[in-house]
Length: 416
Image (tube, rainbow, N blue to C red; front, side):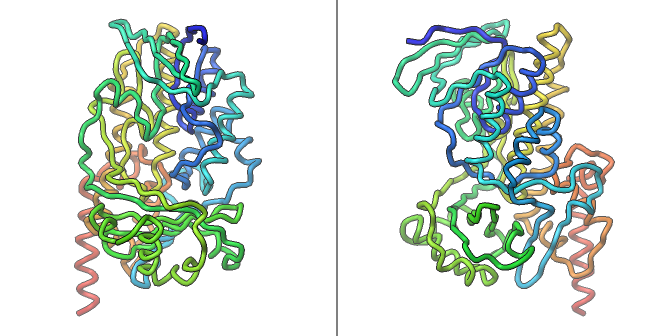
Protein backbone atom coordinates (compact mmCIF):
# COMPACT_ATOMS: atom_id res chain seq x y z
CA UNK A 1 0.00 0.00 0.00
CA UNK A 2 1.34 3.42 -0.97
CA UNK A 3 1.46 6.17 1.59
CA UNK A 4 -1.27 8.78 1.47
CA UNK A 5 -0.10 12.14 0.12
CA UNK A 6 -1.19 15.78 0.34
CA UNK A 7 -0.84 18.34 -2.45
CA UNK A 8 -2.29 21.68 -3.38
CA UNK A 9 -3.82 20.43 -6.63
CA UNK A 10 -4.75 16.97 -7.91
CA UNK A 11 -5.10 16.69 -11.69
CA UNK A 12 -6.97 13.69 -13.06
CA UNK A 13 -5.66 12.88 -16.53
CA UNK A 14 -2.34 13.50 -18.31
CA UNK A 15 -3.71 14.57 -21.68
CA UNK A 16 -3.18 18.06 -23.16
CA UNK A 17 -5.50 19.76 -20.67
CA UNK A 18 -3.91 18.13 -17.64
CA UNK A 19 -0.38 18.77 -18.89
CA UNK A 20 -1.01 22.45 -19.66
CA UNK A 21 -2.58 22.94 -16.23
CA UNK A 22 0.23 21.06 -14.48
CA UNK A 23 2.95 22.96 -16.31
CA UNK A 24 1.44 26.30 -15.33
CA UNK A 25 0.90 25.34 -11.68
CA UNK A 26 4.37 23.85 -11.41
CA UNK A 27 5.83 27.08 -12.76
CA UNK A 28 4.07 28.96 -9.99
CA UNK A 29 5.51 26.69 -7.30
CA UNK A 30 2.20 25.00 -6.52
CA UNK A 31 2.48 21.35 -5.49
CA UNK A 32 0.67 19.24 -8.07
CA UNK A 33 -0.04 15.55 -8.53
CA UNK A 34 -1.21 14.08 -11.85
CA UNK A 35 -2.96 10.71 -11.89
CA UNK A 36 -3.46 8.98 -15.25
CA UNK A 37 -5.32 5.68 -15.60
CA UNK A 38 -3.52 4.61 -18.79
CA UNK A 39 0.05 3.66 -19.58
CA UNK A 40 1.62 6.13 -22.02
CA UNK A 41 1.95 6.20 -24.95
CA UNK A 42 -1.66 5.29 -25.57
CA UNK A 43 -4.04 5.79 -28.47
CA UNK A 44 -6.71 8.45 -28.27
CA UNK A 45 -8.76 10.15 -30.97
CA UNK A 46 -8.82 13.92 -31.58
CA UNK A 47 -5.77 14.33 -33.80
CA UNK A 48 -6.37 17.71 -35.42
CA UNK A 49 -5.50 20.86 -33.45
CA UNK A 50 -6.44 24.54 -33.86
CA UNK A 51 -4.06 27.53 -33.89
CA UNK A 52 -5.52 28.92 -30.66
CA UNK A 53 -4.02 26.09 -28.59
CA UNK A 54 -0.50 26.97 -29.75
CA UNK A 55 -0.69 29.99 -27.47
CA UNK A 56 -1.36 27.72 -24.51
CA UNK A 57 1.63 25.50 -25.24
CA UNK A 58 3.84 28.54 -25.69
CA UNK A 59 2.72 30.19 -22.44
CA UNK A 60 3.35 27.05 -20.37
CA UNK A 61 6.77 26.17 -21.82
CA UNK A 62 5.51 23.16 -23.78
CA UNK A 63 5.93 24.46 -27.31
CA UNK A 64 9.58 23.62 -27.97
CA UNK A 65 9.26 19.93 -27.11
CA UNK A 66 6.34 19.70 -29.56
CA UNK A 67 8.16 21.58 -32.32
CA UNK A 68 11.02 19.10 -32.03
CA UNK A 69 8.68 16.26 -33.05
CA UNK A 70 8.15 17.68 -36.56
CA UNK A 71 4.44 16.99 -36.64
CA UNK A 72 2.56 17.63 -39.88
CA UNK A 73 1.81 21.35 -40.20
CA UNK A 74 -1.86 22.26 -40.44
CA UNK A 75 -2.16 25.67 -42.12
CA UNK A 76 -5.89 25.43 -42.74
CA UNK A 77 -8.57 22.91 -43.66
CA UNK A 78 -10.36 21.70 -46.78
CA UNK A 79 -14.04 20.82 -47.11
CA UNK A 80 -15.39 18.86 -50.10
CA UNK A 81 -18.95 18.20 -51.24
CA UNK A 82 -20.38 17.09 -54.60
CA UNK A 83 -17.33 18.25 -56.52
CA UNK A 84 -17.22 21.60 -54.71
CA UNK A 85 -14.19 22.69 -52.67
CA UNK A 86 -13.92 25.13 -49.77
CA UNK A 87 -10.42 25.90 -48.50
CA UNK A 88 -9.71 27.81 -45.31
CA UNK A 89 -6.28 29.38 -44.87
CA UNK A 90 -5.47 30.29 -41.25
CA UNK A 91 -3.18 33.09 -42.43
CA UNK A 92 -6.28 34.83 -43.82
CA UNK A 93 -8.36 34.84 -40.66
CA UNK A 94 -10.01 37.89 -39.09
CA UNK A 95 -8.44 37.58 -35.63
CA UNK A 96 -4.71 38.00 -35.10
CA UNK A 97 -2.89 34.99 -33.70
CA UNK A 98 -1.17 31.80 -34.78
CA UNK A 99 -1.51 30.97 -38.46
CA UNK A 100 -0.80 27.26 -38.14
CA UNK A 101 -0.99 24.29 -35.85
CA UNK A 102 -0.42 20.52 -36.28
CA UNK A 103 -2.01 17.23 -37.24
CA UNK A 104 -0.74 14.78 -34.64
CA UNK A 105 -0.82 11.08 -33.74
CA UNK A 106 -2.10 11.63 -30.23
CA UNK A 107 -0.20 8.74 -28.66
CA UNK A 108 3.09 10.47 -29.52
CA UNK A 109 1.77 13.98 -28.96
CA UNK A 110 0.31 13.34 -25.51
CA UNK A 111 3.32 11.33 -24.39
CA UNK A 112 5.62 14.17 -25.43
CA UNK A 113 3.66 16.57 -23.23
CA UNK A 114 3.54 14.15 -20.30
CA UNK A 115 7.26 13.44 -20.40
CA UNK A 116 7.99 17.16 -20.59
CA UNK A 117 6.03 18.00 -17.43
CA UNK A 118 7.82 15.13 -15.68
CA UNK A 119 11.11 16.79 -16.70
CA UNK A 120 9.76 20.01 -15.21
CA UNK A 121 9.36 18.21 -11.88
CA UNK A 122 5.64 17.40 -11.89
CA UNK A 123 4.72 14.20 -10.04
CA UNK A 124 2.87 12.00 -12.57
CA UNK A 125 1.57 8.49 -11.91
CA UNK A 126 0.43 6.26 -14.77
CA UNK A 127 -1.90 3.26 -14.57
CA UNK A 128 -3.63 4.64 -11.50
CA UNK A 129 -7.38 5.13 -11.40
CA UNK A 130 -9.56 7.41 -9.28
CA UNK A 131 -12.35 5.38 -7.70
CA UNK A 132 -13.84 7.73 -5.11
CA UNK A 133 -13.80 11.47 -4.40
CA UNK A 134 -15.02 13.16 -1.25
CA UNK A 135 -15.09 16.97 -1.10
CA UNK A 136 -15.94 18.75 2.15
CA UNK A 137 -17.76 22.04 2.58
CA UNK A 138 -14.50 24.01 2.39
CA UNK A 139 -13.51 22.47 -0.94
CA UNK A 140 -10.76 20.24 0.44
CA UNK A 141 -10.88 16.75 -1.04
CA UNK A 142 -9.85 13.22 -0.27
CA UNK A 143 -9.49 11.04 -3.36
CA UNK A 144 -9.07 7.28 -3.40
CA UNK A 145 -6.69 6.02 -6.09
CA UNK A 146 -6.06 2.40 -7.12
CA UNK A 147 -2.93 1.37 -9.00
CA UNK A 148 -2.49 -1.39 -11.58
CA UNK A 149 -1.70 -3.90 -8.80
CA UNK A 150 -5.01 -3.16 -7.09
CA UNK A 151 -3.40 -1.31 -4.19
CA UNK A 152 -5.01 1.93 -3.07
CA UNK A 153 -3.95 5.15 -1.42
CA UNK A 154 -5.47 8.55 -0.80
CA UNK A 155 -4.60 11.99 -2.13
CA UNK A 156 -5.62 14.99 -0.07
CA UNK A 157 -5.87 18.17 -2.14
CA UNK A 158 -7.10 21.72 -1.87
CA UNK A 159 -8.41 21.58 -5.42
CA UNK A 160 -9.09 19.01 -8.16
CA UNK A 161 -8.87 19.58 -11.89
CA UNK A 162 -10.68 16.86 -13.82
CA UNK A 163 -8.89 16.53 -17.16
CA UNK A 164 -9.92 12.91 -17.66
CA UNK A 165 -11.51 13.52 -21.05
CA UNK A 166 -13.92 10.82 -22.16
CA UNK A 167 -13.25 9.10 -18.82
CA UNK A 168 -15.36 11.86 -17.25
CA UNK A 169 -14.35 10.94 -13.72
CA UNK A 170 -15.99 13.71 -11.68
CA UNK A 171 -19.15 13.91 -13.82
CA UNK A 172 -19.66 10.20 -13.07
CA UNK A 173 -18.69 10.25 -9.41
CA UNK A 174 -20.45 13.53 -8.54
CA UNK A 175 -23.54 13.07 -10.74
CA UNK A 176 -22.83 16.07 -12.96
CA UNK A 177 -23.87 14.67 -16.35
CA UNK A 178 -26.88 15.96 -18.26
CA UNK A 179 -28.20 15.21 -21.77
CA UNK A 180 -26.50 17.02 -24.65
CA UNK A 181 -28.62 19.14 -26.97
CA UNK A 182 -26.48 18.04 -29.92
CA UNK A 183 -28.25 15.36 -32.04
CA UNK A 184 -27.04 11.80 -31.52
CA UNK A 185 -24.05 11.13 -33.75
CA UNK A 186 -21.41 8.42 -33.82
CA UNK A 187 -17.92 8.04 -35.27
CA UNK A 188 -16.07 5.08 -36.78
CA UNK A 189 -12.34 5.41 -37.43
CA UNK A 190 -8.92 3.80 -37.80
CA UNK A 191 -5.40 4.50 -39.09
CA UNK A 192 -3.85 3.41 -42.38
CA UNK A 193 -0.26 3.44 -43.62
CA UNK A 194 0.29 5.53 -46.73
CA UNK A 195 3.66 4.71 -48.24
CA UNK A 196 2.83 6.52 -51.47
CA UNK A 197 0.83 9.67 -50.86
CA UNK A 198 -0.01 12.19 -53.56
CA UNK A 199 2.82 14.65 -54.11
CA UNK A 200 2.83 18.13 -52.64
CA UNK A 201 0.08 19.75 -50.58
CA UNK A 202 -2.53 17.16 -51.59
CA UNK A 203 -0.78 14.47 -49.58
CA UNK A 204 -0.66 16.54 -46.40
CA UNK A 205 -4.04 18.32 -46.34
CA UNK A 206 -6.57 17.67 -43.61
CA UNK A 207 -9.86 17.21 -45.43
CA UNK A 208 -13.51 16.87 -44.48
CA UNK A 209 -15.33 15.11 -47.31
CA UNK A 210 -19.09 15.56 -47.01
CA UNK A 211 -20.55 12.35 -48.44
CA UNK A 212 -24.18 13.06 -47.46
CA UNK A 213 -25.71 16.19 -45.97
CA UNK A 214 -25.17 14.82 -42.46
CA UNK A 215 -22.28 12.35 -42.84
CA UNK A 216 -18.65 13.19 -43.57
CA UNK A 217 -15.26 11.54 -43.83
CA UNK A 218 -12.14 12.93 -42.20
CA UNK A 219 -8.69 12.34 -43.69
CA UNK A 220 -5.79 13.49 -41.50
CA UNK A 221 -2.27 12.74 -42.76
CA UNK A 222 0.55 12.60 -40.19
CA UNK A 223 4.22 13.29 -40.84
CA UNK A 224 5.12 9.69 -39.94
CA UNK A 225 3.33 8.26 -42.98
CA UNK A 226 0.21 7.22 -41.09
CA UNK A 227 -3.18 8.69 -41.96
CA UNK A 228 -6.23 8.87 -39.71
CA UNK A 229 -9.54 8.21 -41.44
CA UNK A 230 -13.02 8.18 -39.99
CA UNK A 231 -16.68 8.80 -40.70
CA UNK A 232 -19.03 10.86 -38.56
CA UNK A 233 -22.79 10.86 -38.95
CA UNK A 234 -26.14 10.17 -37.32
CA UNK A 235 -25.89 7.10 -35.12
CA UNK A 236 -28.67 5.25 -36.92
CA UNK A 237 -27.01 5.92 -40.30
CA UNK A 238 -23.69 4.43 -39.21
CA UNK A 239 -25.48 1.51 -37.56
CA UNK A 240 -27.30 0.79 -40.84
CA UNK A 241 -24.09 -0.56 -42.40
CA UNK A 242 -23.85 -4.31 -41.88
CA UNK A 243 -21.07 -6.39 -40.41
CA UNK A 244 -18.31 -5.76 -37.90
CA UNK A 245 -16.50 -2.44 -37.56
CA UNK A 246 -13.97 -3.21 -40.32
CA UNK A 247 -16.72 -4.29 -42.71
CA UNK A 248 -18.76 -1.18 -41.92
CA UNK A 249 -15.85 1.16 -42.56
CA UNK A 250 -14.82 -0.67 -45.73
CA UNK A 251 -18.32 -0.27 -47.12
CA UNK A 252 -18.60 3.36 -46.03
CA UNK A 253 -15.40 4.29 -47.89
CA UNK A 254 -17.33 3.70 -51.12
CA UNK A 255 -19.34 6.84 -50.27
CA UNK A 256 -16.32 9.03 -50.97
CA UNK A 257 -15.86 9.58 -54.69
CA UNK A 258 -12.81 11.73 -54.00
CA UNK A 259 -10.89 9.43 -51.64
CA UNK A 260 -12.09 5.91 -52.41
CA UNK A 261 -9.37 5.03 -54.92
CA UNK A 262 -6.67 6.42 -52.63
CA UNK A 263 -7.88 4.56 -49.54
CA UNK A 264 -9.64 1.40 -50.73
CA UNK A 265 -6.67 -1.00 -50.69
CA UNK A 266 -4.93 0.35 -47.60
CA UNK A 267 -5.11 -2.16 -44.71
CA UNK A 268 -6.41 -0.89 -41.41
CA UNK A 269 -3.66 -0.62 -38.79
CA UNK A 270 -6.14 -1.55 -36.07
CA UNK A 271 -9.72 -2.75 -35.88
CA UNK A 272 -11.83 0.38 -36.41
CA UNK A 273 -13.20 1.95 -33.25
CA UNK A 274 -16.80 3.10 -32.93
CA UNK A 275 -17.89 5.81 -30.49
CA UNK A 276 -21.68 6.02 -30.23
CA UNK A 277 -23.61 9.14 -29.23
CA UNK A 278 -20.40 10.97 -28.36
CA UNK A 279 -21.76 14.45 -27.49
CA UNK A 280 -21.69 15.13 -23.73
CA UNK A 281 -22.80 17.91 -21.40
CA UNK A 282 -22.73 18.67 -17.67
CA UNK A 283 -24.81 20.61 -15.16
CA UNK A 284 -21.84 22.80 -14.23
CA UNK A 285 -18.15 22.86 -15.12
CA UNK A 286 -17.04 23.88 -11.63
CA UNK A 287 -17.95 23.43 -7.99
CA UNK A 288 -16.44 24.04 -4.59
CA UNK A 289 -12.97 22.59 -4.78
CA UNK A 290 -13.03 21.36 -8.40
CA UNK A 291 -13.10 22.35 -12.05
CA UNK A 292 -13.88 20.29 -15.14
CA UNK A 293 -11.78 20.88 -18.25
CA UNK A 294 -11.97 19.78 -21.87
CA UNK A 295 -14.03 16.71 -22.69
CA UNK A 296 -14.67 16.09 -19.00
CA UNK A 297 -16.99 19.07 -19.21
CA UNK A 298 -18.47 19.30 -22.71
CA UNK A 299 -17.87 17.47 -25.96
CA UNK A 300 -19.69 18.79 -29.00
CA UNK A 301 -18.60 17.19 -32.27
CA UNK A 302 -15.34 16.51 -34.10
CA UNK A 303 -16.32 18.38 -37.28
CA UNK A 304 -14.31 21.52 -36.45
CA UNK A 305 -11.57 19.89 -34.34
CA UNK A 306 -12.33 21.98 -31.27
CA UNK A 307 -11.64 19.30 -28.63
CA UNK A 308 -7.97 19.87 -27.81
CA UNK A 309 -8.33 23.65 -27.96
CA UNK A 310 -11.16 23.68 -25.44
CA UNK A 311 -9.13 21.28 -23.32
CA UNK A 312 -6.05 23.50 -23.19
CA UNK A 313 -8.05 26.74 -22.91
CA UNK A 314 -9.99 25.46 -19.91
CA UNK A 315 -6.99 23.69 -18.35
CA UNK A 316 -4.86 26.82 -18.45
CA UNK A 317 -7.64 29.08 -17.20
CA UNK A 318 -8.49 26.72 -14.33
CA UNK A 319 -4.81 26.64 -13.32
CA UNK A 320 -4.62 30.44 -13.34
CA UNK A 321 -7.73 30.84 -11.20
CA UNK A 322 -6.57 28.19 -8.75
CA UNK A 323 -3.27 30.03 -8.43
CA UNK A 324 -5.13 33.24 -7.57
CA UNK A 325 -7.32 31.42 -5.05
CA UNK A 326 -4.37 29.74 -3.34
CA UNK A 327 -2.77 33.19 -3.08
CA UNK A 328 -5.88 34.35 -1.20
CA UNK A 329 -7.19 36.41 -4.09
CA UNK A 330 -10.93 36.42 -4.69
CA UNK A 331 -12.09 34.32 -7.64
CA UNK A 332 -15.57 34.40 -9.14
CA UNK A 333 -15.62 30.94 -10.67
CA UNK A 334 -19.01 31.41 -12.29
CA UNK A 335 -18.03 34.60 -14.10
CA UNK A 336 -14.30 34.08 -14.63
CA UNK A 337 -14.45 30.40 -15.54
CA UNK A 338 -17.84 28.97 -16.43
CA UNK A 339 -19.26 32.01 -18.24
CA UNK A 340 -16.04 32.56 -20.15
CA UNK A 341 -15.53 28.95 -21.23
CA UNK A 342 -19.20 28.46 -22.09
CA UNK A 343 -19.16 31.53 -24.35
CA UNK A 344 -16.67 29.72 -26.55
CA UNK A 345 -18.56 26.43 -26.28
CA UNK A 346 -21.78 28.18 -27.29
CA UNK A 347 -20.14 29.64 -30.40
CA UNK A 348 -18.89 26.25 -31.53
CA UNK A 349 -22.21 24.65 -30.61
CA UNK A 350 -23.92 27.03 -33.02
CA UNK A 351 -21.48 26.10 -35.78
CA UNK A 352 -21.93 22.38 -35.13
CA UNK A 353 -25.71 22.69 -35.17
CA UNK A 354 -25.70 24.86 -38.30
CA UNK A 355 -23.35 22.43 -40.02
CA UNK A 356 -25.88 19.65 -39.62
CA UNK A 357 -28.89 21.86 -40.51
CA UNK A 358 -27.04 22.59 -43.74
CA UNK A 359 -26.85 26.35 -43.24
CA UNK A 360 -23.09 26.44 -42.76
CA UNK A 361 -22.57 24.12 -45.72
CA UNK A 362 -24.54 26.55 -47.90
CA UNK A 363 -22.07 29.28 -46.95
CA UNK A 364 -18.98 27.10 -47.34
CA UNK A 365 -19.91 25.84 -50.80
CA UNK A 366 -21.45 28.99 -52.26
CA UNK A 367 -19.78 29.67 -55.64
CA UNK A 368 -19.52 33.41 -54.94
CA UNK A 369 -16.96 33.88 -52.18
CA UNK A 370 -17.12 36.82 -49.79
CA UNK A 371 -13.55 37.20 -48.46
CA UNK A 372 -14.60 39.24 -45.41
CA UNK A 373 -17.16 36.69 -44.27
CA UNK A 374 -14.75 33.88 -45.02
CA UNK A 375 -11.99 35.47 -42.91
CA UNK A 376 -14.40 35.89 -39.99
CA UNK A 377 -15.57 32.28 -40.17
CA UNK A 378 -11.94 31.19 -40.57
CA UNK A 379 -11.15 32.78 -37.19
CA UNK A 380 -13.85 30.64 -35.58
CA UNK A 381 -12.42 27.52 -37.24
CA UNK A 382 -8.97 28.51 -35.92
CA UNK A 383 -10.34 28.47 -32.37
CA UNK A 384 -10.61 32.22 -31.74
CA UNK A 385 -14.17 31.93 -30.44
CA UNK A 386 -13.77 34.49 -27.66
CA UNK A 387 -13.00 37.41 -30.00
CA UNK A 388 -16.22 39.43 -29.88
CA UNK A 389 -14.83 41.92 -32.39
CA UNK A 390 -15.65 39.18 -34.86
CA UNK A 391 -19.34 39.44 -35.88
CA UNK A 392 -19.45 35.68 -36.46
CA UNK A 393 -18.55 35.24 -32.80
CA UNK A 394 -20.56 38.06 -31.23
CA UNK A 395 -23.70 37.39 -33.28
CA UNK A 396 -23.21 33.69 -33.90
CA UNK A 397 -26.77 32.76 -32.95
CA UNK A 398 -28.35 34.67 -35.83
CA UNK A 399 -25.61 35.56 -38.30
CA UNK A 400 -24.98 32.07 -39.71
CA UNK A 401 -28.70 31.64 -40.38
CA UNK A 402 -29.01 35.12 -41.89
CA UNK A 403 -26.06 34.69 -44.25
CA UNK A 404 -27.26 31.20 -45.23
CA UNK A 405 -30.66 32.63 -46.18
CA UNK A 406 -28.99 35.32 -48.29
CA UNK A 407 -26.73 32.75 -49.94
CA UNK A 408 -29.73 30.56 -50.76
CA UNK A 409 -31.56 33.48 -52.40
CA UNK A 410 -28.43 34.38 -54.35
CA UNK A 411 -27.99 30.79 -55.49
CA UNK A 412 -31.60 30.61 -56.68
CA UNK A 413 -31.08 33.89 -58.56
CA UNK A 414 -28.03 32.45 -60.30
CA UNK A 415 -29.95 29.33 -61.31
CA UNK A 416 -32.76 31.42 -62.76
